[in-house]
Length: 282
Image 1 (cartoon, rainbow, N blue to C red):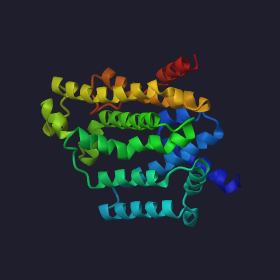
Image 2: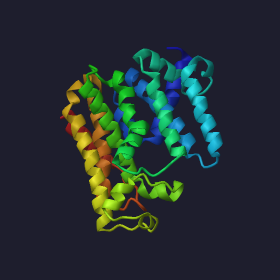
Image 3: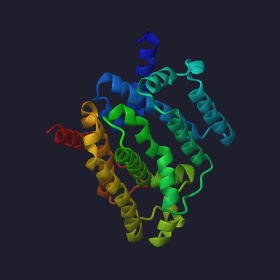
Image 4: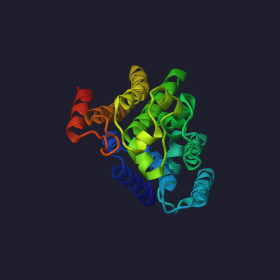
């Protein structure tokens, strides 16, 4: 590995360490080569996500920058001066990652730029696929011993579960900062909970029932992934399961905060993380 490529992978490591404690805790335990690959993919996803959330950019500027990243994916050798691109290119080449799947991540970010509250569960899950579900397919060549259809589905379901978890954790932040409601309209109607109540940060029985209904959607997907865990490559099994179980635990942290996802941020404590890790290593 050249000095320049090593420096780029080191940059990616810093990006994930700064932005996602859960993922860094999990994937830093993998062997260096595979960890570097995950860090490079994470950095790409982080960069395009940051474009969408940048309050100082206009919508037109955001779309232009996402288009630039589409071009980067098509011609990576021409953009090696951009931090993270060398590492991304090396990872795509080493693991034969389908670039079309990375392009789907950009599709997901465009859905946020032209945001509309999902009308129903179908639209909700479609959004979750594009911003996170397909990440399981992107990482599949890095973490798997085989590529069977049921395992591909399990990887997608894990990504969707994690995105549902993000949405349930960040209901207040998403509304206060971006005026976005990711909860499906049909589900809000079904449980008798309104946008006005989100704005008022109202936590009542209807909200808890709605929240738990969607949490169950996530829990079922985490469980499905666990049932297919035998498809994980042995060297990454602990890291991937640690990431999955830590993310699942975020739901319990919100419950422990009495469902206050408006003024409190659910997270997994270091003590709980150590407990999860000890359970995995037996």
